[in-house]
Length: 126
Image 1 (tube, rainbow, N blue to C red):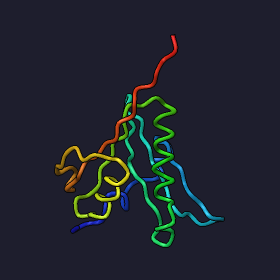
Image 2 (cartoon, rainbow, N blue to C red):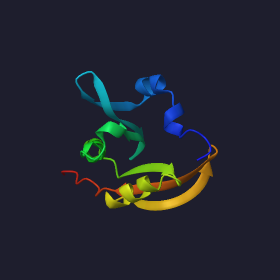
Image 3 (cartoon, helix red, strand yellow):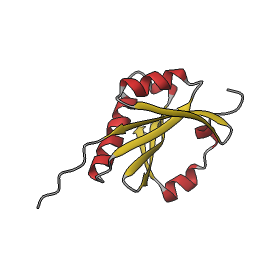
Image 4 (spheres, one colour):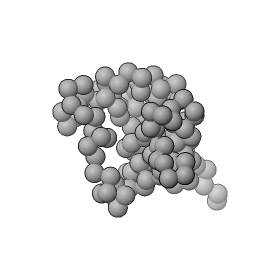
């Protein structure tokens, strides 16, 4: 990639004010984060990140599971996300967690790959 990934230049102060943000901590050390943006009946997983020192411990899986629980709690029909096409480890990671690639496009100067995962529609009691 010829420039910093979008999450490295994001305005997280604004995200804290306008989105749902979770932080995984160990004492005073931040190990990971999750940013969710509800959009109608779809949840945008705007960012999920795990510090390199905390990778391979299941924290990414835990954060994705938190996104699932939050989307289900809010009765969302799906979660959508995107990643840069050069981040090949992310492509495989999301596929292994049940996400389906839905397209590729250039957006904001990045070559992005879009994914989604569907939920069953909730049954509403009569």
